[in-house]
Amino acid sequence: MKQALTLLLLVVFLTGCTRTFSGIQEDSENIWENTRDALHRATSP
Image (cartoon, rainbow, N blue to C red; front, side, top):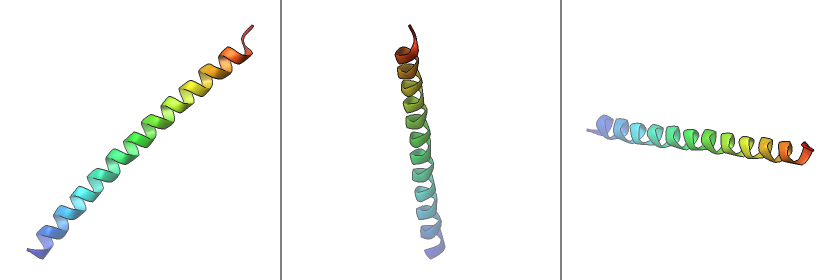
């Protein structure tokens, strides 16, 4: 019983971490695209 509960908690924890990491990657990609676009607009004639 104790092992099953530990396994369940571990799975929930790892799933949450995976989703958080995916969110961080998505946010970083959006920030990079916005920065690149802003630099392009600032330096284009």
